[in-house]
Amino acid sequence: MTEFGLDGILISRLENRVFLSGFDGSAGYLLISKSRNLVIIDFRYREQARQQSGEWYEIIEVSGKLSEWLPALMEQHGIDRMGLEGDTIPFIDYQEIITASKNTRKPVELVSATELLDRIRLIKDCDEIASIQRAVQATEQAMSFAIETAVLPGLTEKQIAWEIEKYVRENGGNTAFPIIVASGGNSAMPHAQPSQKVIEYGEPILIDLGVRLDGYCGDMTRTLCLGGQTDIFKNVYHTVYKAKQAAIRAVKSGMAAAEIDLTARKFIEDAGYGEYFKHSVGHGIGLAVHERPWLSGRSEDMIKDGMVFTIEPGIYIPDWGGVRLEDDYVLECGKIKALSGLEKRKGSN
Image (cartoon, rainbow, N blue to C red):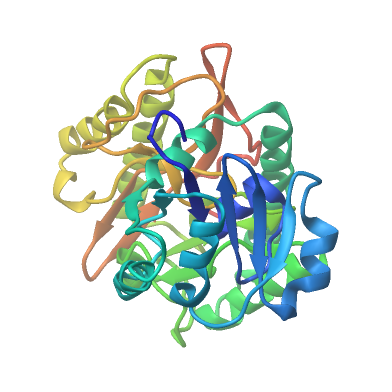
């Protein structure tokens, strides 16, 4: 806060609130100033906040809109320059806070401080890495269930997605994001939603799932094919697999994250599929399923020890389908370490 020139900061993003206080209610704020740390809730979260918040936090209850109580708290705590998480505070709330603050002792300055918390969460400590490891292991188990049990010809994508989600919940986890089950032409959409399409032999079947345990996420993608594989499936799968291995081998401490993306991208381009790989090769993972570091060609992040991230190249051909392979990794002592140990399948079941 001193570095950013702030008297206080309002935390509104769920992941940052959990990271700093432990409180994971679906609504609420943290207000951190030079003198006090507050968990701000309405009456619905009174008991939950009391049980989850750390000893460094005082719990206060409010009602009404943000602009109806925040200016008074800022004045009470002597906050003239407040940091906000600009990516989660709606512009109308920003306007109303500015207007309401004109009735306090003097106008306040509101500035974006999103980068502050992103930077703090970028490097994981040992406990966080252990939590992510457990989430990844649960994700592996769910993926094994999907491949070995749930994916059957004649079932719809939605039916399979439901069987996987039921497995996750019955085994003590929650899904970190809506499960993707996409087959045939649907798998050419990287973030396809499960549909009523029936699974058939000989087509690509893409499964992307993640389990959330104790707030932390795993994220894994596999692509398989039931029955005989076509030549195009074998070629595309082999290209994605090799591109992923090239990206893994390239990772080292101190390198630009963009270089990892460019390594996988060049391999796919050289194989003739460059126009079919449009998303970044990976992203950070932790309390959020997508967070820094960003492994894209435009990323300014540098890879350092303690960072946890995915590597997930993909090729998506319209009217045919797509192949994506994704695993989670951590950088330790300058070397990349896989957090998932699920056998890398060659596209068959």
